[in-house]
Image (tube, rainbow, N blue to C red):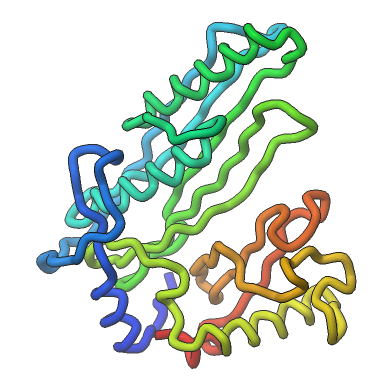
Length: 264
């Protein structure tokens, strides 16, 4: 895999990011404790599958939850695994309030229980639910680990919702890296991204929403999810983030050479 030659400043900044506390359960981990970790051994990953169907069926179909999760092993693994779990929990959890699940099995049981409760109470509920999540290592080098969550959920209505989420980690410590920590010049990088976005989707100068896009306050912004790839940084806008659902995902690729002046 092609290695990125990030500057020494980027590596130093990422190594100093605040660390998530490694604990026995995902529920008790935090995102804001300071890092004081020894030199890390290489992290490795193993894939695990969690799946269950509801006993209560709608017609001949049952609600199903299918999770394919890459789990880290080695120094810093707890930080990565806890972050991934919390992200998956946010995706799968249904309804208001915070999920109480502390494991993937408990999260699945919670989702199915919510479905069965609503189905028993609402005689018009005639479609089974679905929650599918695949968490995989999308990119890894000596500095960065990028885990991708590809997911789809359906809990009734006209259609379900599918999206991709990018989680970034320091490859030596497992520390979570927030998107904005990547940049020393976010404003300059945003201007470059807008230029490339307009060129790809043929948007003329002026209002960014003039051709039907739906950026808030008619202003271009970076997406929530940035992925590291072999060819560069992929900026991904999921459904509704920049355009109507029917328009699908939108993305733009910025090569590492182009991005380098703006990275830490």
